[in-house]
Length: 246
Image 1 (cartoon, rainbow, N blue to C red):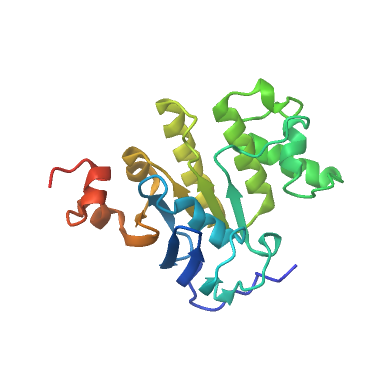
Image 2: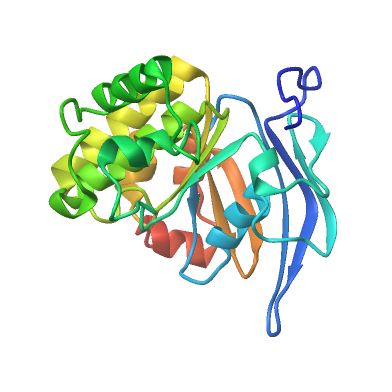
């Protein structure tokens, strides 16, 4: 696996330059720079390209032109497993026939050949996300919030420096949303990870992000520090998301 331990000095965590995806009826072009350690809310109307952006960064969606750089390294030709990125999809991607412990252990070794040190890492991750003692349970016995925490624990044991979360709070009630946001903030600070999360809820943006982007029509129409983003008045689609009467 490629070595990501020596990133280019001064390089942002993620740099996209005109990374272009052409679907049959739609063309998407992404350009942005995201500094290391940032926590970025990714917002925009449904179908605007938010999940496609994540798939481009993670390597699940090939680009036709442009560049994707992670820590200063061009990701051209790099498969998802070769990129220093973890992605948590909206549906969690847990395996129903495996226990919680096994689902988390997949983040360490897909064959689940785990020795004592690896099992301790799994136990620590479950404790860290508030699921101590849940290792033997199956996903069907968990609530939506608990399943999301299992997925987060799996990402935690992978120790990838970039974490992408596709609507991580969608299945949670308001109190659980606040708890999960606080957990993500703590983990981001603890690990120095760069976090990007997709949300349709303004409160999530205010609660967690230090900057935010707005995707509209297949492009990143705006990316600003959180204060500037929340004060923006010029784009009708963004004003609608912010609930602002222009």
